[in-house]
Length: 136
Image (cartoon, rainbow, N blue to C red):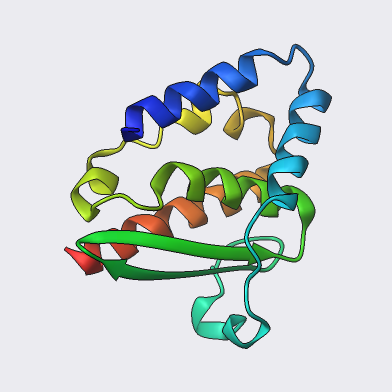
């Protein structure tokens, strides 16, 4: 599935919910399905700066593609990073850097977060972009 197809699938999933409380529940459920993150990887180097809660993001490059792994100590933030991983993990650096990350606006996520969580979301996106830049 292409990056655009994945984004469209997520937009479609979020359009099934009329109420933002239901969308938050969905985000929380996404966070629960996030792969486990080793405690030994929860280091300051992997901590995303600028997030209200603690978010760790790690990645590896394999066959020219980036694979992300993450965790957070806040359940909604865990869901948000899970969503980003679903979109961007397994992509080439070029695909990631070509993305405008507008899916977060298209599903209304950015607009429906508190200012501190929205800043955290931007920090997560910046970290993913930086990883893609470094892997190029």
